[in-house]
Image (cartoon, rainbow, N blue to C red):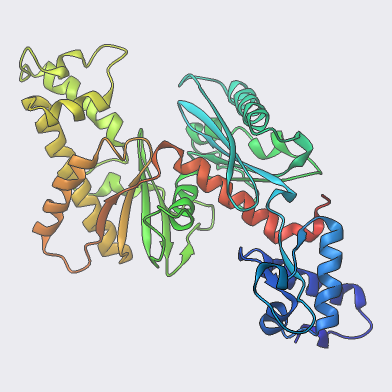
Length: 401
């Protein structure tokens, strides 16, 4: 029981009691003092005192009593409380290679406002820092939230990150993808988290109602745009590794029939150009446009659905590649499910259908189920929102509202 803490540390006792009450409040439903007593073992007087303190501090709302809402009929009506969803706002950011997206939400994860802007592939670190700041400001304005009401920001980057939000210096792309966003956004009034984008996508898949990770103990979320990156959840725990590199797919460089961690968008463009150069593309094929700046990998996927022979061959190669990747990762990590996520997930659905057939052909008992995400292009920013909410929950008693 929490009340058994030594009597000479009342401050610690109050803090621990407040922490356990607030964590219970975060479960989402309205509750009474009796609910808290049953859950925590605290006495009624302690529970009432802690709840009053948390109401005063702005974390809890005291609701209409239980009798007024038809939940109590005899004796003294029970006081009811709930977490104040609007006690603070959080911001989740997807600082992608080609686009920056920010999502503002309350403490329940309800989206209040969003903003996004494209960014050049060759943008400098300073340009990326300026863009992230601008998009956050846009999203906060769209949400109608005061800037000082934001208590946590989480930024997702296409690079491994350590506990401090820093990325390794060994790869120039990683340092460009994460030009010290943690330092840029640091502020005494709020928490700042920088995390790998695929990790955040995995968090979203496990937290959002439509996520394919809900109720699944072990799964991998693969972002497949420009490069493959994986967020790995094993036995309910997100794997990070010593340097934050768990889920980096460079291991695929050594897998026969895969050979790289390139994503679907890159491969479609590359294979289209190769087919044109080899002279194997019909004149009417969409692949003929592969050298044009506006050539979009999704056009090839659409063309395959309408019978373009060249596009069909590329989608077949993609399906075989996805199948091989899934079998290898299934053998290695024994996960239940692999989720293809990001903006390419929906356009790739017919490819994933073919990949599922190919996976069955391996007749491997460890082969995971392959599915396409339902969370769309916002999967990383939504995961960042949930990660920011977790940061607030873990440090709530140190924050001033």
